[in-house]
Length: 300
Length: 306
Image (tube, rainbow over all chains, first blue to last red; front, side, top):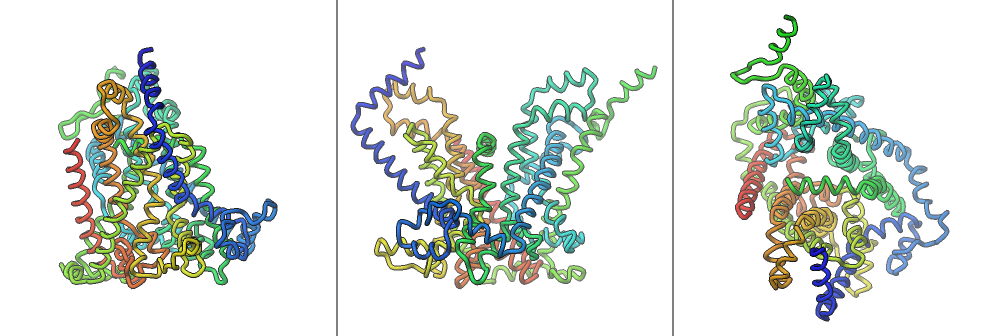
């Protein structure tokens, strides 16, 4: 009870002060202005994707540039339809992105969770050394230039047209940071759970799949979400690996849409908006895991 | 008899340490895939980069690599294009880090109070984070188009003459600074907010009872409490800024007149475009040494303050 009385008292005292009201109003006005600065480019991108190029240019100097040209929703998605009609591989690039992301998420989750568990719970010759290497890789910022990776892929023969996809995907499977994240999570789990399972005769392997994994949904979801965002947004490595449009993921395909002659600004904005939708959905529906991941990285 | 034998052989010794057999087998199996792929795609590139720095390796003739000694490093120190890229990157870092850091911290401090529309504001500031670097770059490229872009149209409304933006060697890097801060600040705001939430409210209550004003509370409670978060954000932001590449690659290709050429981009170009893997590796090595020194020094300095 006492703790409740105290804040109420403080609040009541504050509400009376006129200086406080002025301060609060200024803060809200300032925030609103900042809000406009942060939001207007995104708003314009979305709204312009719902117009024709002529409408965009005609309304550029008017406040109407931030509103749809028509409220007839049926006419909004012309540019989106045009994207599929004008670019043979636009649909394909979406499919490519989905496939690349799915495989990457699967590989990342499997490999790094196994490694994290081994480092957290199992002692074997070399486990300490590997743990130290993982930590070092996180702490020391190596200029991870793509050039040497490209050289290695070339030597492994993974730059042929067919194997390029493999060469693009596999290097992203292991991440020192995700191994560390899994390790920290598993260390934090009560050991008694596993010990109880093992006394019941369950082996290490089945303990992992039956006890550990179901209890670690949160960390798996967090890593999956961050991996998805990284894989979906990858640009530099993807544009180096895929020069053929039929292999390109969406982010690289944007280059083709943007540099296409004659340029159609509404199609460009439609492509940009479209490629952002999956990320926005993930942010909106998986907030909890994202906050968890963010606070984890913040606490490190 | 059988059973006794089995329990006895559960343990084994290796280099004077005792391990459990099954743990070793399962552990090795669990970590093997990560170790193999990590060795090939994380460690090997570092080794390749390190060793190629002393050779004249060419991307097209990787079979005939000749020893170059320290020649590549000598070349680096007299390469004015490299120094230009280094200077540009430092200018970017010095401008973007304070801007983005203060924006993120300021927004987090305001949103940490019980202000009306808190959730809406949080989403608004976070909105640009949802755009990828590629989308951000393509979007702003079009917004900043000198002839038919939205920004110059808006400036016209306020009677400001049209600006060349990305087409001017003087403005291009500043534009990239602002765009990068705009895109990224919301993310660090979230990290600061979660740091601020971890401060126990009792601290403020106790200080309030003792008659501390809001200024005292801020400098004596808030700032010291989020100092670890602050140093973490500072170091990660700094390393991220050192690696700037996607934005200039898409928007300016390093131009106009090399004014947005950055170190990471230069290293990439030397290796991929000009196929000079040896030289690219040498600069990458020098740059890694530089970045590590800065990052580790900074970490030490901020850790001592705690």
